[in-house]
Amino acid sequence: MEGAEKTTTARRDRPFDLEIHDLAARNNEAAADLAGGKFTLAIALFQHALDGCFAVLGPDHPDTLTVAGNLGVALVKAGRYSDGLELIGANVADRVRVLGDEDPRTLAARDALAVAYRLAGHAGDAVAVAKQVTEQRRRVLGPAHLDTLTSRVGLALANAAMGDVATAAEEITAALGDAERVHGTDHERTVALLHCAVTLAQ
Image (cartoon, rainbow, N blue to C red; front, side, top):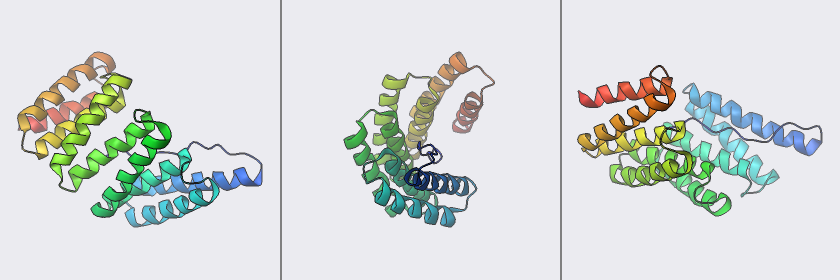
């Protein structure tokens, strides 16, 4: 699962903009807690930031959508799969409505949904969503874009969770070839793909 997204609002000097900046800072603080495994604290901070975003920016503002997605990810990482899946699913629908189906921010949320399904044990749903977002990212960003490679790994892991290790290995091998060609053998994503390929081969 990709890390929490940052909000995009920059700091300004007017009181309203300072309030927005404080919400962005709270989101980013929560993201750091999430990365550090402090799930309960991250959830509380994301919820506080989301409440503020609803009040200040409204439900359809891109930063509100970002924080909502981050809260969903935090819930899943904390093992609250039902709550997390419900929130991430709603977030994907909101991003499709507001941003468009193939906006990179929508694809990030859809990728998170695929990972959430896999972590919750819903392998069939994980494969379906991972396949969709992988195809979209390949088309929009290209097969070797780092976000596309992330989705390709997710698709491979979802297939492996379904018991289709052969298909998973084929996807990882193909992704590894694209990563080596574009990013080189020493790039961290290439190294991670190589490790994944070795693990699937065992």
